[in-house]
Structures are given as structure tokens and as C-alpha cells.
Length: 484
Image: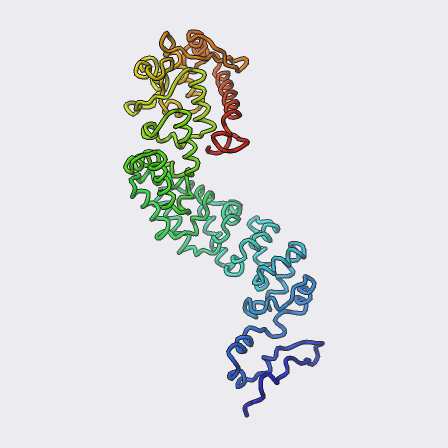
């Protein structure tokens, strides 16, 4: 006969024989007929409330010691998982860190008590992960343990090692930075991503390993719907396939970030700030794809320097787009100041596309080009950006001093002489400057000490950084690293 006693009249709990103060939810008193008639909310409560022995007495006591009520874990996972793993998980956690940190972790991620943490700990420490890093991983990416499986994680580790990655490389470069890689399916996720790197970017085995260590996030991207369209987008704006491949390899963030907005921002900078037409902007981007790797703020600082300090404009950008990818603090600023203040050279406004950026005196337009620019700079020799910025410091000094030698004379007298011993600039006549160039210029007969010339330029650059660096970067203290 059906029990028609009202639900509210039923006792909420009773003492169980053989147990002291052991409580039982009133849902366990409802027989099948009553449960069928109970309200929906009450039936949901009956399903979510675990039996009294879901957590063992030992685990219950440890939770009490931590100050965490056992009810915190009811309904967060399968009752069976909680019953099997709670005690062992608490043992593992309390052995890894302090009680307060364990309490904070479990209150934030109660599902961890349903996971075989001891087995995960053994698995990851076998690959070199420290116990401290393991505990940190529990807090930063608990989904790995609540959603992942040891079987899948083992397959991922084996596949990555089959690519030639050492276990410590997998751990340090991939798992610590993107632990979600261990959740990926090898056949449907990892293999297509690696095939994209091999076939579409043309990377060999060594470069694939290098790329994965630099950008492990690519392993979490879908090759067909996410990676391949990025290469197509770059080729669609006119970049050659080889240039697009090289760009994506050297700037891996373009494969994982928002590529289309990045492209639009660079083109907008070229059309709005540099006042180029849309076709000219695309031409600059095709000539120098590396522009995509620089932030707009970085590009804008260099453009302002070109316009305000070097009295240049978009003609120079069209002539030498690589200018915007050079380092403002280490190359553009110090070299320009050295060429103009020490050697009496000035920026050429003519196009330098008719010939290559050659070494020596032909790269810096010397006395033969003086007449064309003498109207605006009657005492200075013109030079182009390519000659100023291509190559290392030694090549720049070679070209600059060669130009100074050619410009010596009544119409092109360099204004400064380099004092190698003291590193200070002194006014001198052009003939004395030429004699010094013959003694110090690399590659010129009579060269004696290129190191002294380099040392002098480095001192000049240090003084320039102290004087001008903060102005052009907006920082109070300026170092020499980065891509300013």
C-alpha cells in the first residue's frame, strides 16, 4: 500500500544503529512511490545528496582539520569517484603544501578531491616536474585533472617525444606554458597541427621542434579552420608564399593571435600616420613583411623620429621600408647622430632604388652627389637610410668614414674629428678627419685599430641614450634591450 504520509511530516534524520550521531538525509526514507510524487526540486535534491559513506571517516576528519565542511564536495562529481579518491587526494595534497594553501585550493576547485592526484603526481614527476610545480598546476589549470585522462596524457607525451623533443623540453616549454596540450587528441589535434608546420610552412624536423618550444599554443589550434586561413590571408594581401612562411615562422604569435585586426592596424598606420595611399601601404608591407611583428606604438615612435629629427617623410619609407623594423635606440638614433654630428653627413631625399645598398663609398652618397643637395645642406654630404642602417656597427662605420673621406674638400668638409683616446669630439678641418679615417677605417689600406673606432662609437651611443633615449621612448630610464 502506498505511503501517503505528508513529506513534511517525515523525520529529517535518525540515529543509525552502530554509529554515533551518523545522520542520513530524509531523502533515503522516501520509498519509490513517494519519490515519484515528490516535487521536482525535492527529487533533484535527493539525486544530488550522496549517501552517508561517500567520504570515509578518515577523509572526513582531514577535512575537519582543514576547516572545510564535507558538504562542499557533495554534487561536484560522481559519488563513486568521490568515495574512491577523496582520502588519497587529501593525503597527496597535504604532503605537497601547507594546510592553508590546500584549503584555498580545495575551496576554489572542489572537483580535485574526486581525482586520483597521486597517480597524476607520479606521472608528471616522472617527466621531471617538481612537486611544487605540480601543486601550482593544480591551481592554475585544474581542468587538466578534472577533464583529462592519464591515458590521453601519456599518448600526448609519447607523440611529442617521437618528434624528437626531450622530456624536459616537453615539460618546460610546452606543459608548463600550455598544459591544455595534454587534453588534445593526438590523431585529430596534434598530428594535423604538426603537418601544417611541415607542409604549409615548409619546416624540417629541427625547425618543427624549435617552433613548438617557442609557440606550443599552436598545438591547440585547428589546422584546417584556424592555421591554414592565416597563411592564406597573408598571401591574399600580396605577400609571396615564401615571405609569408618566413614571417609566420619567425613571429609565431601571428599564428595564434588575431591576425586580421593586426594586419588592418598596420595598414591603417601606413595610410594615416605615414600618409601613404592604400596601394603604397600594401607595397611597403610586401617589401617588408616584418612590419607585422611590431606594435603600432613602436612603429609610430620611429616614424616621429624620421619626421622630426631626420627631416624625412614617406619618401624614405617607400625607399627603405626596413627603417621601421630597425632598433631606434641602438641603430637609428645613434647612427644618425654620429653621421650628422661627427661626420657632417645628412639624409638624402632622393631615391636610392637605382642601385643596391653597396658596401664602401658608393652606399653613402659622397662628394659626387653633393651638388644636388647643396642648396639645402651646403656643407653636408647626403646619404640614404639603407647605407645608414644595413649591416652591423662596423660596416656602418666603414661606409660613414669612407663617405667622409670622399666629401673632404672645399665643398664638403666634415665638422668633427674623433678623439680615439678620450672619446670626445673636437672641431677640426676635413683634411685631418680624412687622415684619421685612413688610419682607422676597416677595409681601407692603412687601417690600424678598428676596435678603437668601435669603442668610440659605443661611447657616443651611450651618451646619446642618456641625452635622447627617454625623449623618444617616453621612459624615464632607457636600457639597450628590446626593439625600440
